[in-house]
Length: 55
Ligand SMILES: [Zn+2]
Image 1 (tube, protein in one colour):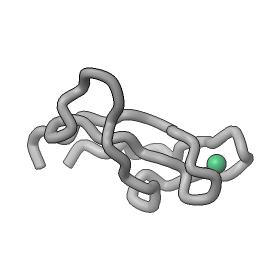
Image 2: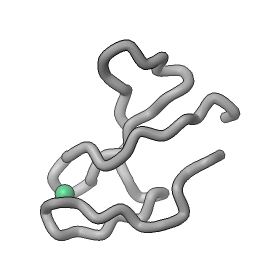
Image 3: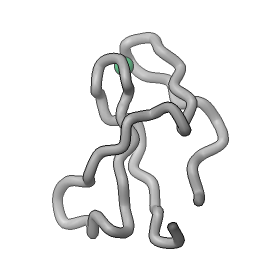
Image 4: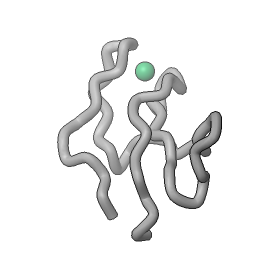
């Protein structure tokens, strides 16, 4: 599954490993079966939206 390999830096100061990020459904018109949003487990901020259609 195509998670990013680099840690994601959150505005709260935490560096979040992609595997440790909270998964959330996307927003707007994106298909939630194909896209998921990675959120900071500490503050809940959205970090990155990833394509997961191959899962
Ligand atoms: Zn955060």
